[in-house]
Length: 523
Image (cartoon, rainbow, N blue to C red; front, side):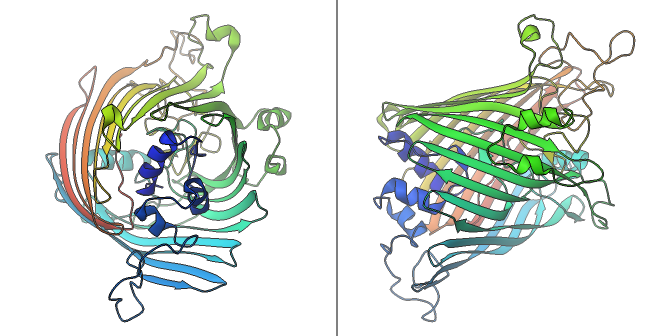
């Protein structure tokens, strides 16, 4: 995820006559190759060489074995094995006007390996060792959750710096022409927007089994994952010891093509676990309704349902959206009483491809709104989190967000991106739970005059209303295949009603990254 291929594919999907199954990420290279039917641009052909050898060899390979093809450090192919080995490197430096931030940096060294065996089994691995010093607002999240956003376990270095390993990988088996099973350690993203209210890549990697069934008219995806319920089970940081408590996620998503350019998705998930641990076999059924089983178990688990859609119009515009229902009482939803159990989230967005006749200029607008206490539950075993970070939107709940994004791919070498974010959220006051923090027990909420948790009168954006704006700009130049030089700038402002928070940040950075995704810290 985060690969340069995604923007190219996004544009081609909207401009094509038939849509691509783009909602569930990451994609397989085979599905991308099949979508383009071998007619992809030169960059994509290099990325999918295992399916087509339409790629020019280097004029002067290094030591006759390395860079035989310019896109791969080492490449080997015979009738049984296709193997690609590449370095994964990032060296970034930046500065911020934030007091005490020091020089910002990211230093990553690793390797990325992928391949196929007998055209039936695919494998992928990525491992890197990293040191970084992030902006203060990222450190604030680390200090409050004990987790670096996107990452997992870490050690402190150089004052505010962090040291961590990043590892992911999988083995993928083709069970039939339409069904594959993938056993891996990584993460997923569900949706066609900048954000996902269903499942995002904001949290750490996790072990999972993913079963994918794809036909011409539908795609059905199952994910069974083991997550971390709490990271305070051991001493965290440099002296981190002890095992963290575990919980489990069962998730399935059905994407149906109503028309070639219109698809509707239905999803359901259930989060469960307790101090004794253990899988529940009933949730391993790939085609059952989790909510029905959860009720049979006594409604102790956290079931979430919802839908999404994508509608490509006139080969230039794509409308998309999501609806997430954590809990819903129809009788209270329209009463105006502000019942705390009406917990929903909604997203609506649009993309305009080749905007105003400019080739490869994409404009995007998106709105996200999530009511208080959505995704929360009684404890860390059942809330919708992993490793103390949200599995959906980074802002948690009780927020409204507006996003504007522009991406211009001037050529295969040059890419320009700008994102403008404006959000409001209701934060807690005096320790009372107003519904934004999904890690808090939702049975202990804001209090009424008698000191009891308030059942009604829970309004959207309740609490200490906070405004957050971020402007992000990035210019990327691809010097060699997947070797990027980035220049980026982030302007961030956050302030709340009582002025206990009033922070303005200006952050600038320069990066050299090779086979490493360029992340955006938009929170």
